[in-house]
Structure formats: C-alpha cells, structure tokens
Amino acid sequence: AKDAGRNNFQFYAHDMNSRALDRLKLESGLRRALERDEFVVHYQPQMEIASGEIIGAEALLRWQAPGQGMIFPGDFISIAEEAGLIVPMGEWVLRTACTQKKAWHDAGMRAPMKIAVNLSARQFKHQDIVKVVSRVLEQTGCRPEWLELEITESVVMDNPEAAARTLQKLSDMGVHLSIDDFGTGYSSLNYLKRFPINSLKIDRSFVRDITTDVDDAAIARAVIALAHSLKMTVIAEGVESAEQLSFLREQQCDQMQGYYLSRPVPAPELEKLLNATSQK
Ligand code: C2E
Ligand code: CA
Ligand code: CA
Ligand code: CA
Image 1 (tube, rainbow, N blue to C red):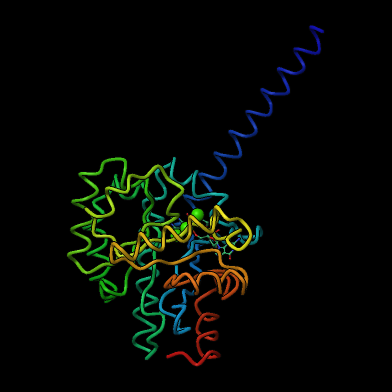
Image 2: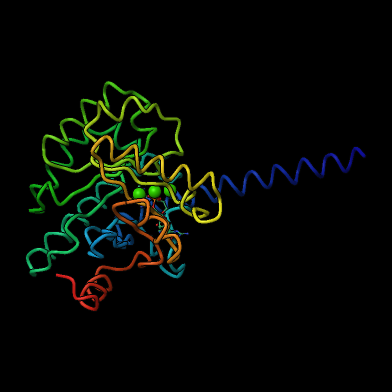
C-alpha cells in the first residue's frame, strides 16, 4: 500500500510538472506568436432579422501556429489573460479589425456597417483603454461609429464607478457598446440604465434550446423585452437552425449571429459571402 501511495504521488507530481510545462510552452508560444505574426482574425457576420441585411461582423481571434493548424481562443485566451498577454493581443485584434473595416469602406463595401471587437476584463482594467481605442481609430482611419466593443458583465460589476466613467468616455467618442454573454454573469440590472450600453447579446447557452426548453424561451423573451424597454437592441448568438431563427423573429429579436448564417470566416470569404447575397 505504501509503494502504491508513493507511485501515486510520483504520478501526480509528474502530471503537474508536465502540465506546468505545457503552460509555459503555451505562454512562450503566445509571446512569439505576436512577434511572428501568427495570429489571424476571422469575422462572423451579424444579420438584422427583419431585413436580412448583414449589419455587422464580430472579430474573433485565431492562432495559426506553424505545423499545428488552427488554434481556437478556448485553448489560449485564459492563459493569455493570466499572463497579461491579452493586453497586447487585444490591441492587435482591435487594430486589425479597424484596419479591415476601413479597407472595406474604401473599397466601396458598406456592409458590414460595424465591426464588433471583444474586450477582456484585464484590458479594461490594466490599460487606459480609452486612449488605446482613440489612438487606434485615429491611426487606422476607422470611424468610431463603425466600432462596437463587446464587454462582459464581470467587467462592469468589478468596479462599477470606474467602469461607468470609462464606458461614458467611449460612448461620447461615438463607439457602440454591447454586453456579451448577457444573463450568464452575476449582474445587477441596475447598471443597465446607468451605463451607455447600446445592445445586449443573448448568450448561446439560452439560444441552444430555445425551441424546446420553456425556461430558455422565457429567458430569451425577458431579455428581449428588457433590452427594448431600455431602448437597446438585442442580438442572439449561436443561432444554428431555422427554427431558432423563426422563434427569435416572432419574439422581435433585432439581430442574429450564428452558424445558421455563417461560421466565423477569413475576411476574403466574408467578402464573397456578401457578394453572393448581393449586399452592399
Ligand atoms: P464569444 O465572444 O461569446 O464569441 C462567440 C463564440 O461562439 C465564438 O467562438 C464563435 O465562433 C462561436 N459561435 C458563433 N456562432 C456559433 C454557433 O452557431 N454555434 C456554436 N456552437 N458556436 C458559435 P470562438 O471564436 O472560439 O471564441 C470563443 C471565445 O473566445 C469568445 O466567445 C470570446 O470570449 C473569446 N475571444 C475570441 N476572440 C477574442 C478576442 O479577440 N479578444 C478577447 N478578449 N476574447 C476573444
Ligand atoms: Ca463576443
Ligand atoms: Ca458571446
Ligand atoms: Ca461566450
């Protein structure tokens, strides 16, 4: 029994070391990725439900590590957050998305009108995000009203006073603000009326069973009613079927995003998609 115990201990110790090692490798990999330009941004279109028009696109980060194929944010964002790397990475995504939107505009493409960029809590707290955003807009020639910043409830709830000031400055600049994953955080509805938020995103976890689960349907309806009564638009994410879309249409949800319309795709593919649906 003693031996077995020791073996177990060695097993776990080894396991922990290799995990720590994996983590270090990932961290240094991410550091190099920035220098070597291994990140790419994919764009997922957002549609206005009533008109069928593509009104926006969300910028989503991908990592093309040589010889490793595409790595998705679920496998590296939390490490990047903990290592503080999300700050330069996030600024890179912002700059790339703004540059892309300006290029589309200059090429005569009007859709997508807005580019949505995710902001992490860490970026929001540890960086003068207002300065970063205004500098990037100026340098890229992207207009503030073309940009939407997606934040989560945790960003807002951490330090509501500081968040309110920051969001107000961004809003005064003309940038749109939306709450991502709405309903999954520990939110106080109180902040919604005090903060200059333009839209709410119904989280994918509520959309998934929207046509079969009465509770999820009720939550989606409530979020839509709440958003509208506060003069916000509401967008459903993770829409994968015609049934989900027709439910959302019936409930007067304004916009949708999801595989049913398109997966996140490289910029040239979004252009093709827009041409095919003869959007302008
Ligand atoms: P998110 O902001 O909630 O983004 C939506 C995620 O849902 C994306 O995953 C997207 O590919 C996926 N998705 C979209 N439509 C569907 C659908 O119909 N079905 C299903 N099953 N999934 C769908 P992705 O790109 O892997 O990103 C995961 C998360 O990583 C994002 O969740 C976001 O929190 C984070 N992330 C991605 N890019 C960035 C970034 O540039 N900065 C920061 N801070 N976070 C990012
Ligand atoms: Ca998002
Ligand atoms: Ca989301
Ligand atoms: Ca999410």
